[in-house]
Length: 241
Length: 231
Image (cartoon, rainbow over all chains, first blue to last red; front, side, top):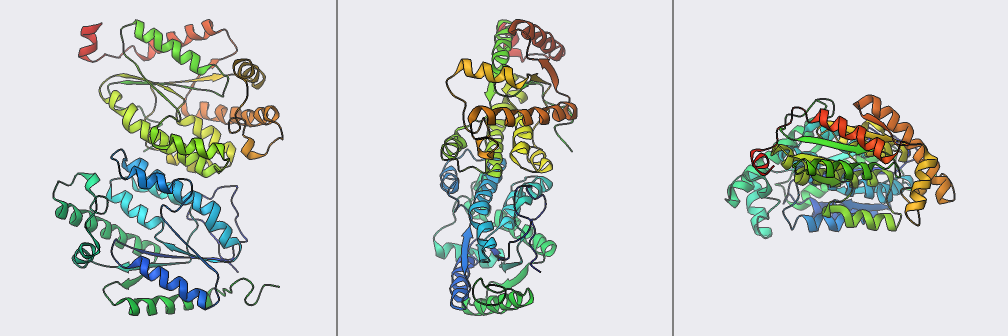
């Protein structure tokens, strides 16, 4: 039977069942190659005949742009930071994720609540508060974690452009040394990710491997997950008329 | 743990008003502000849903009726958090008086009626300090409706809970929606120790009560040095 759950408090007005699709999440710090892998995985799934929608932070119609704008300024506090991201997820959940899951789609999320839990805690937000805040989220069936150490992260981020304000945690006033701030912030994030990984049972992949190897591992794991959960794409096989 | 159940340690004082639309709470708070100003104090005023950060989004979302109970709730929480950090905590820490037109209890009442989980909504506002005095202006629906209709032309969609589809017309929907909110306020008044004011009384009678209670709240209050010199 389909197992559809929320992380914690579920809203009385949201569906408790009938969501036959699957939510698959790819998490990982900045520069771990996560987005590239998500795109490749979506293509592959579609070639296999699965209906997929992809989602990610700040893509909501309601507040996506407002978050990006707010991050240009300096008025965001850790509370408003977390609350705006929660609003973004709530909007996508109700208008995109839940409808897709109801239609039996695979929803592929490039980052999910774990990123916000890690960022929030790294910013000093209360752990219980954060958990409660994001407890409305749909519980994913599978969470991949592309794992990378800080030392592997630095050259990648530099090659990709530069260390940006938020990725370097400059809002937290570690000091005005960009490099030192980046290291301190990303180290704190990775530490949180590792804790979350244990708690929520992420499937960790070594992100230092080449992209093709990682993609192969992802595909194998996804295939196994879809088989073990007896998933079939809508209109493709059993269960549909 | 629950900041709303334990007194804060700031030298300032936080006084807030709650009540459904048309309860007269804003009028009472304005009069209380004049009273404090006349005493030589300089109260800070803040109102619900007014932070630049999300005001435009909420307005647009309301206009397009695209807000869900959850996003409605979260946008207001964002607004509140922003004002708390920028407009409420600094004056409280500086030993000033802050007057708030609506506080977290508005969310506790409205968001739950809209369909959000009661514990979830309370949990979101865990970071809010407990007011030194919270007035709840209790009024029957019919009186609030007639006050609103005589004051301005039209009820607003979300104020009437039109997003819930309780009734086809604004006034019936308003009555049903605000009626449920009254029910939530009754629970909240007990749970958080709000001071109930009978909002069917005349403005003057209510204000007398309000001022007397504010005096009690401020009995141990010392204005910052600078203010004492000015006064």
